[in-house]
Image 1: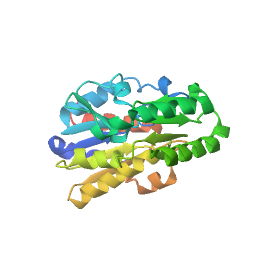
Image 2: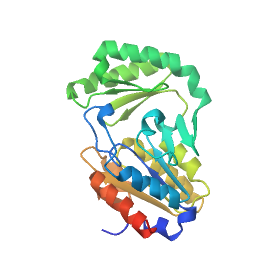
Image 3: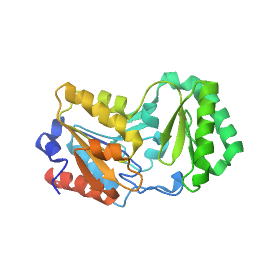
Image 4: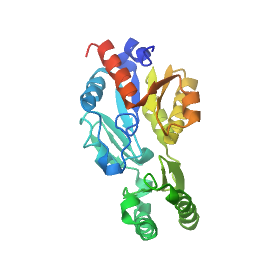
Length: 253
């Protein structure tokens, strides 16, 4: 396999590296709270953050979860851009705050409909999971659609789940385009539907002249469209770890 992230090693001070969490740095877990970063990989990501112009983890997870997994100097984007920790400062998009009460009500409604065990509250968003019960997929999707239509929230499919968010049109792509601006080259490593907008963000940076690298992590749930759009495909979180360690070696780590 060629070294997918080699372009970042050629100009590390200007380079930016963006990473999904679940399915890239951590194996997909049966329940969200059971996920944990691969052993030793937090140190690798931290070391890369010390050597590259920017390293950020961009995830649907809340920042409060991500901070427990990654070093303090790694930038974090949570809830698809609704939350972030940049240069150590933690913030939530102000326009999301008025939706917090409505989200809390939806969390209660979802718990009554499906049981609290499959509902993941995230403050200004929520996720309902059918990972352990495929029979829940259709009713959960209908519930998400109906709740969005009734409340004005946005809904979207995710990893064997559905999500509700404030209607702010933020996603991984808007985060990558914003935080990647001024960096060259820029790479993103992802594994699922939510990472397709991140590839769109790379497209916008490429239109502005940046060299970009799209890396897809092949797994049981990786969509064909993501694999087709990628410049490079690696196998599972083990493959993602290899390319990150190879980059660190290239940078003298």
